[in-house]
Image (cartoon, rainbow, N blue to C red; front, top):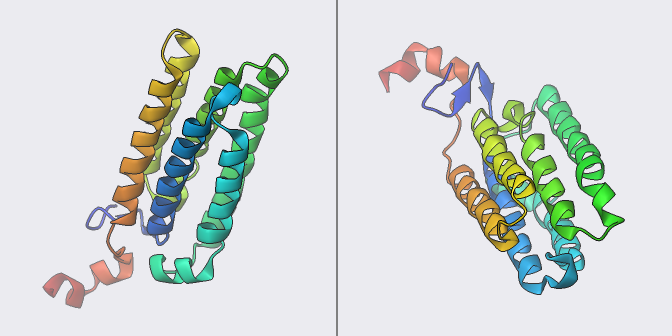
Length: 191
């Protein structure tokens, strides 16, 4: 059950703000990679270096996590995060990977975008149900580009960036989750 829109079924989503900063960062490095583009459409060195910098600068940075997180994930949420990342890489290799051979970088990147979109489904257990809608929007954008090859790749990337920026900002600005126990207590209802 939702408590002030920040809690679902008694589970606190304590790391939404870290996820929000991560989404904003990924959108920024995608944009930088798109500007550097070249034959790969999105420069893989720019994207890869930016991605690694984000892992160390945001996801594994204890100072950032202390500032933005409201507490550790549950063991179940940690497993779902791991499964989600594994799913993403398997899907990237399966969907976009085969197109490296023929140099079709549009399909390489759209395959990566689809894999990233789908990996947000299990993230719903980590960051809340809004991840399902994020998954749908990102996946639909990637599929649209796959089904209509005449659509501008740059337009598809800008849509992907906009969705990530909006979701990232919403998550980054989300307030402190309310614990289920607090909302049920008489003192919490009196406030």
